[in-house]
Length: 195
Image (cartoon, rainbow, N blue to C red; front, side):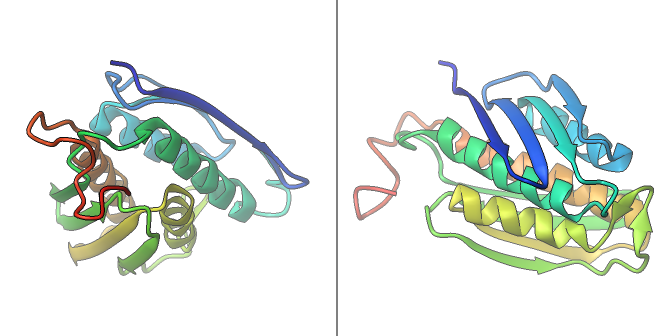
């Protein structure tokens, strides 16, 4: 059963096209104009086993802010659309992911109610051409456009590259879990009867 969507968004600052298949195998074709961000989105696709195509034309002559934030908005929309009615899915997902000296926790709920709690100690302004303060903005954008309760907490870590990469990977694993089916679930997993 395929859950595949295409979402696009064009503003005066960015032009973004995303194709997402949440029942994929981890194939990715990413071009945001920001090399380190491409690497992170590739990691997200690979470790979540999502097929992901991302094409972004952004105002990088200004800075990376609009490109990264708007990509989060569109990716969140794609996740929400691909999840569909959410019937039969586990809804909750979590991962504690080790990457060298980093230990990163990600837990999420596809509740339809957006909220982000983000705790990660980044100590440099940039990693490659990626502004590290944009890590929070990216996941804030995803949580709100997807309608997702999202908790990200660094349990240990020093190297900023590792911290950021572990964040993307743990998010991918937690999201894959939450989107997985459980044949014991009739309808949606909620006492309210809808999400």
